[in-house]
Image 1: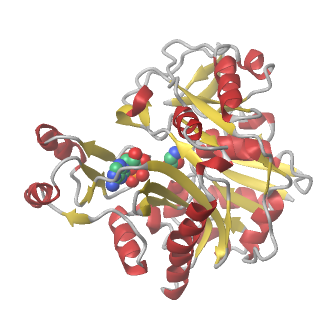
Image 2: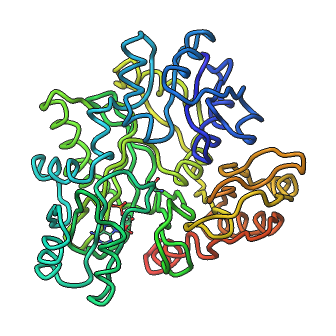
Amino acid sequence: LKVLLIGSGGREHALAWRLAQSHSVEKIYATPGNPGIANVAECIQAQTIEDQLAVAEARKVDLTIVGPEAPLVAGIVDRFRAAGKAIVGPTAAAARLEGSKAFSKDFMVRAGIPTARYRTVTSIEEARAALEEFGFPVVLKADALAAGKGVIVVRERAEANHSLRLLMGSKLVIEEFLEGEEVSFIVLSDGRTALPLQPTQDHKAVFDGDRGPNTGGMGAYCDSRILGASEYRQIMDAVIQPALDLMVHEANPFTGFLYAGLMMTRNGPKVLEFNARLGDPETQALMFRMSGDFASPLAAAARGDLSGVNLEWHAEPSICVVLAARGYPGEVRTGDIITGIDEAEETGAVIFQAGTRNSEKGLVTSGGRVLGVTASGADLRTAIDKAYHAAGRIHFAGMHFRTDIGARGLKRYAAEPV
Ligand code: AMP
Ligand code: GLY
């Protein structure tokens, strides 16, 4: 297969790295890619959907895989399919499950999928009234795409006005605060059937102990112990299958990766958000744990028939620690020289690149999340130690990272019988 990968982040580097090890893959192209992806793929500067389609046609690409949400919401899948090109991802209409929080919440209610109570408001006055109704803590969500940063948990009344002003657009979703463990549950769908990936846990807040503003994700781990068998069944039966079924029923079938961001509450799993794509940095941990040929299931999903298809996984848990640039998740400084990647990889870790670019000074930072240090181990503790050992060999000015990725898992497993 000749494969085209759309995107330029750490998620796409991890996908490219895994696909490069697939026997059925003969060549990988990436638009636009990044310096890390360039180690395993040919990167081509094509930014618009039309340019990307032209690349797929000129290079006789067999299968296109879309990383980020923006091209999905803009209709890349519709355009490729109309041109007869196989592609993994949802149509623009189906990607509204991620693209619009209001659409997504209304959909969950129609499907009977458990989610937080909420209200959609269109003015500051309405928002204030809703806040009185919900009390504190309460969660504010901007309606449109915000790269994981459009959500604020308002802990007390004094913070409410400031947060409202930050997020109020034409629409705002106000919802009940839920307590529990968060789980990222991602499935690959052919429209009807769901092929689940392993569960992962992301770390959204920028600082240790889940403090500070939300980011796109500061690290993730992948461990089969994240969910018990009955929790897993509940998620498939109460969330995933009802979502896919209602999409079919509403003549809007969902193909590609459906990502349910879940809160495992005392009353069962509740959906915090749907994404229409793989998570970042969840994908880095997932690709590290996956074994076997990932291109075949992807091609089957694009063909619309996942029956009889399986995914294979290593038993060892994996973890990805994000090294972020100075200022992230606010305004970031770029252009800082990165050193130590080769030394870090000598430890057995793999360093996925996200916000990097080549310059005359060598590899430099070019975005908020710069690198994803990814490793696995016989148990979660070992995986964590390996990733941090490797991270210690990397340097760039202003680098910061969380030191507690995976710690919630360790705490939970310590309390459980083996
Ligand atoms: P979202 O983009 O909707 O997943 O929200 C980003 C993050 O905000 C989530 O990963 C949670 O950590 C937090 N969050 C969102 N909604 C809620 C909620 N209803 N209750 C508690 N935390 C939430
Ligand atoms: N890591 C969270 C996301 O990809 O949305």
